[in-house]
Image 1 (cartoon, rainbow, N blue to C red):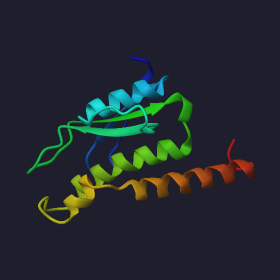
Image 2 (cartoon, helix red, strand yellow):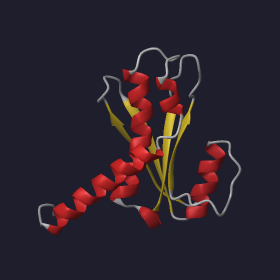
Image 3 (spheres, rainbow, N blue to C red):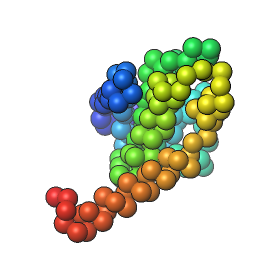
Image 4 (cartoon, rainbow, N blue to C red):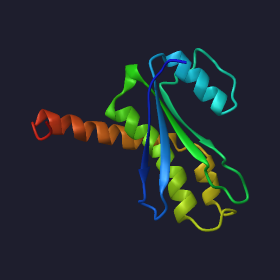
Length: 139
């Protein structure tokens, strides 16, 4: 494996301590292979995977995540990508900790596709940071 860094980050924003294991790869294809394996999906070298979040231990009817792994690639360590992948992890924790009744319609949004939300957060975060740098308000 071409993992160049690994660390954990955590938050108690929802009232429960939630943790993400972060793995940073030097090789994008290695990241893509590992991400596909974690999701139990076939690996496709043409798929543009530059980062990803996978949950381990996510089970019904009482879903709780044993571990969340965020995979990043050194060639795309941008504010946009990090915010995007963090949004995926945060969405799962938010729904688990804040939305009662797992058999509700909220389940569709948790396990469904929240790519548009992750792209919005990533794009807005990156543009705000870029402009703060441009205005010399960030070092």
